[in-house]
Image (cartoon, rainbow, N blue to C red):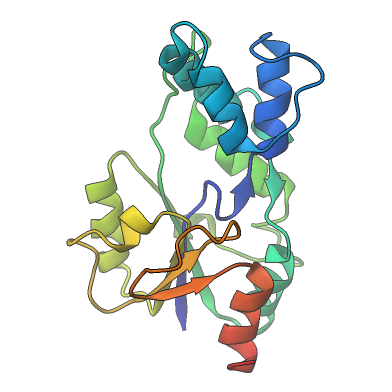
Length: 205
């Protein structure tokens, strides 16, 4: 089995990273609580909010990448993939540099370093080949790459990717939707990596 996985918000979670970065830039006060979507709405509500939000994204995916966390129960899934010698590919729409980032931190290199520290490339942990990591500059390039890899399954948190008319016809499409906000999609929707592990390795619950 050849499994493809999106990166941002599917593998790497950013709620804490966004909160740390926003507080460091005084975009919210120290008492602010909430996830990424709540924070996004708060920052966008500021004067010149869209510019501030895009600049914050650039900081989080670069300078604050070390504050990202693995999605819950993903480690078990990747460990089983390694144990069963399944081919795992990571395909992400990720630009090389963030919006309005004066430091010009390479977002792709930051993501690779984060994966390294999490054990993605460690043969004794998840054992994913670095040659199986693909960062694409546009959604169209991401979809083309998914098609080229001849995947059996692709897992993404964005319904607009899985529903794109140019999404390859062969891979099984799985929407990772822990918030449960997309209950009417015409393909598999799961709320947790535990459910994905169950479906791939143990069959229907």
